[in-house]
Image 1 (cartoon, helix red, strand yellow):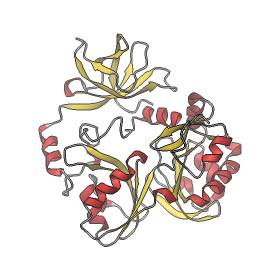
Image 2: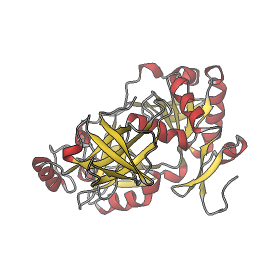
Image 3: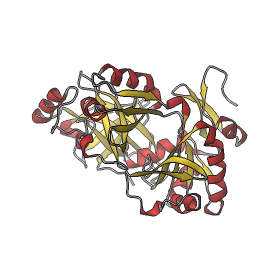
Length: 365
């Protein structure tokens, strides 16, 4: 094990990751597997077959009561009134300075009952923020430390899992879920969601059942070349789809409109800072999050400077990597509105060189 500290939290599957030879690193206060074999091998395992991610570090809140929808409508940018039991919605929590507290996924379990899934590094911050706005008498429960979350992703994911549940996995529409028995465990949330863009499901289970479910998934998937996948491949897979990562591409200083999240920012209702964001929409943003691919040979990394062709700073790389699928450097970053159109040439400062890149339309793949 590569960690020198014992202060980190561990998921219920920690011993399995260590036994599999996972390289364990600190992530959001947890000891997490970054890879088991190589990032590239794991990336293609998910692209071509099926991979299993332990993402139990994520946070889960249960909100119950007559004011639950009112509270969610107040703190989130999307219109949660469009939800119905079994429906999932992507949204964000705007702060009152024009930025984003976090992005999250909202599940409507039943009338007056919602399940919120938030980023691992923001669990306490999000809990405090939502609690601060809870003037509606909503009963809030933080289930994060009791809940394990597994993401089973890839083109063969639903086939590999079908023997473990009566739910017709292939019939589930994107961003819907069912609460059902899975691998003999009752009341598992089976969700047709994921962070790879490659199909599959995410499962929410009590910690005490995590190991059983993990083992049964691998047994059921052995004919489908199933593999355990670390955070390294999770990052390259999400980047190839252009999915934002909180702390990189969006944070307390980035507006949802700048980040291309206008589609989850609905001005049909009032929410935190909605007036200021509405004004920003009317006036137009001054910078935008764009995707770019390298023209010159080089790998853009988080924090590298972005320049115009005259060498003037126009922003920074927020996420960047060598794309395993395209075999070129790809990235996301904020640039001035004038340079945000696909086809525009920009430069990336890689060490002491300025390398050419081209703004493109998402997704990369």
